[in-house]
Length: 140
Image 1 (cartoon, rainbow, N blue to C red):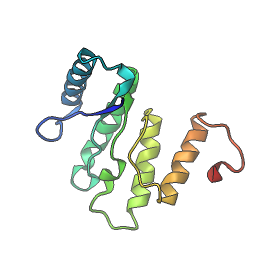
Image 2: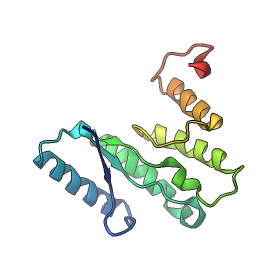
Image 3: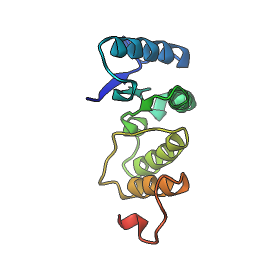
């Protein structure tokens, strides 16, 4: 059983110190209930760039902090592009997923119909050596 643990309480965490307090609390609670560490997937909450641009690097840092602790991470990636014009959203989502994957993001809730996003994820998997390169990698 996998459980998504939102790193917030009563709204969005103010900073990574607060995110990590929530992370630690949820980790301890999950373990006390008999869950395994790998069953808990921590969500730092991807934030809307429009209006919270200054918080984006913190979210990426939180993903790295989870990874450094040996924890899985996930989240609703497209939250970052909410409110943007339709033609910009795939660009912003693709840029963020590449940056998040470099911080060892485990998974994300994404739009599988967004071709640019899917190509970015597949290309990042090749660059990170998660998948073996083949000329047909985009078709797989």
